[in-house]
Image (cartoon, rainbow, N blue to C red; front, side):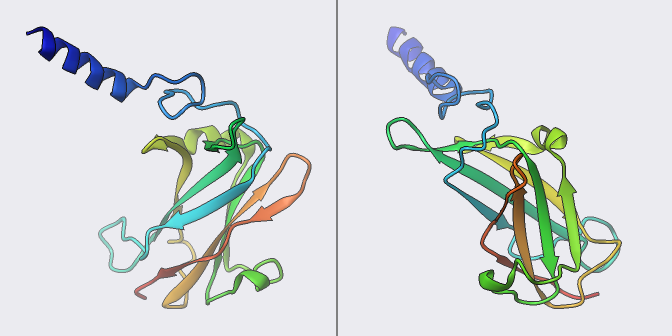
Amino acid sequence: MKNRQVLVWLFALALVGCEGPGGRGALRPPPPTVDVAAFSLSSSPTALNWDDKPGPDGVIARVQFFRLGSKDEVLSVPVKGELEFLLFDSRVPAAEVVKAQPSKTWRFPAEDLPNFLGKQMGMWAYQMQLDWRDKPPKASVVTLVARWKRPDGAWRYSDPTLVAVSLR
């Protein structure tokens, strides 16, 4: 009986986490920062259909920001600033993203970002549903890029990711 209680407590501690604020087990995110070493964009590999009409309606995008901790560990963190997603109706290489004209842009101001922040597998990330029903893409493969505007006005871009779209 005592061994079973110990196992239950160990399991509960693993679920809740034993680290301090902002650690992998923390239930609340660390404070937003501009101290970002890198960030990454991932998305569903194909466009998704959210209604009962034929054809894709959008994509789920996930952005993670990372900084180095005091012991050179990589930590996922929330950020200060704005986040935008740019959709291009073709394949756009990273070197051309800044100059290319997106066919659609989604903007998420700083005050809205906490609504999209969540924790999965111990990592903080922003996850957004990007709906393009008002202006669907014209290409069968589109490029998606995340763009982060720091509070000082500087922009940083993610690497582009491709999304397959089955046209209506």
